[in-house]
Image (tube, rainbow, N blue to C red; front, top):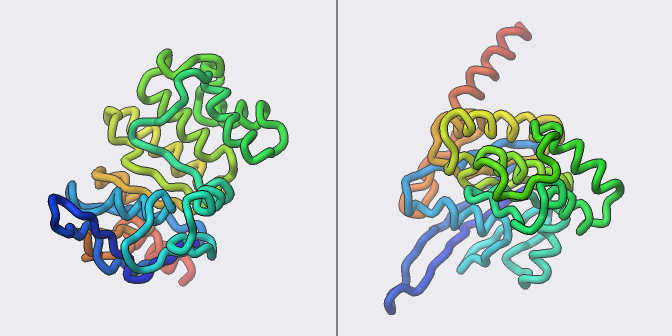
Length: 238
């Protein structure tokens, strides 16, 4: 689903080249769940932007669903995103002039898929917002807005979902609810999930944890929870 080779990002800062990412090579298979972690400034969000085709690398390769994003222009990358990608952002990014239902309908309509209203309604019911369909973002709490954003992200049935600090603006209770929804929908729809987070508990719910330091991958391991699950399955088979 996703593959990079020696991915590098350098920017010019006050006349000097600043390397944000250096020689990042990784592979993400279909239906994998992957957390990218690291301290602030380690390159997490930059890597996510490159993986999703929101930005171009300074060097190296990134392939998404067999499309060479590093060789495509912005319009071509936008077409790949429209076909394959869903997003959940820390700051929700809902359109303020649209109701919750209309926000979720939008990606379905843009892909000219059938029954946009019915499908959007079903998704909002799944995230517990069937009584908030006609509410606008400013009439919803932060947790409710993030649930709308998750419903919208899954609305077009993306092959891969990118989430940038999806619980970062939420308290623990709402963060846990949003995490549950994210993984429940991901499992139901068989979506590949790549997320950036500072939340160790959220990262541990993924199969893999990729750790960045100074723009380099310093660890890429199965999470402890996934390792325990794998050991339990092996024991059950024996």
